[in-house]
Picture (cartoon, helix red, strand yellow):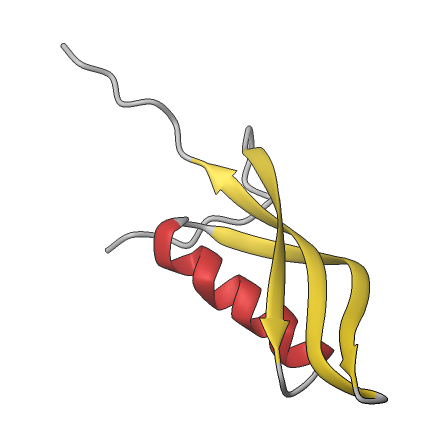
Length: 82
């Protein structure tokens, strides 16, 4: 069984990717969508830093919420071939 990686693991290297999640529901949903999408292609996602919240306004109302986030994930060690 695989163990879950965390930042606290000894010798861990953490990489950070910046992305923007979008939603018509709200900023929290936009951030959730960014994490969900990142998790589809990135393993060991361990953290999120909300950098900025912005929105698109149409006809005096918020039409789309944008959450700029930095997603942290543990980098796996390189495979050693013998």
